Image (tube, rainbow, N blue to C red; front, side):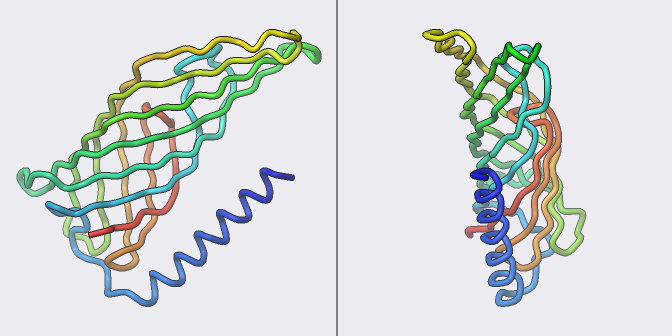
Length: 189
């Protein structure tokens, strides 16, 4: 019930942001990412197994921010950061369960290229950060699990489509803190 309430609240917030930003702002720019632009994205998707047994697909939430640093050929090179949380649960038999919660913080850099299509921003990049894993086996009283600390890195490919000069949708695939995620993106400057 709690997950359903959170999902409905986030969906409602997304719809309110979409209607407020998409119809009240200027039209989408030709190349949304530029030098000195700031973006902030909120996304949900499937988390990666950096720690655990690698079984199942777990939900993940992710926050991404980036700023355009340098013009590089026809595109822009960005620097930023990301934070994510993912949860995995697995049952071997009806009486044996285990779960992992992974929290990751990292820096990221990406090359953005807009293809001269209004509102479209495509990019590829690499993250580098630290992850923290919390493990538990609720079937063993008194055993709270261990806390793993690990480095994480990977690669991602993404695209954003802006409905106006401030608000859009964002998606990424790859292997970093998520396998894939979808969400909203805000251009702050």
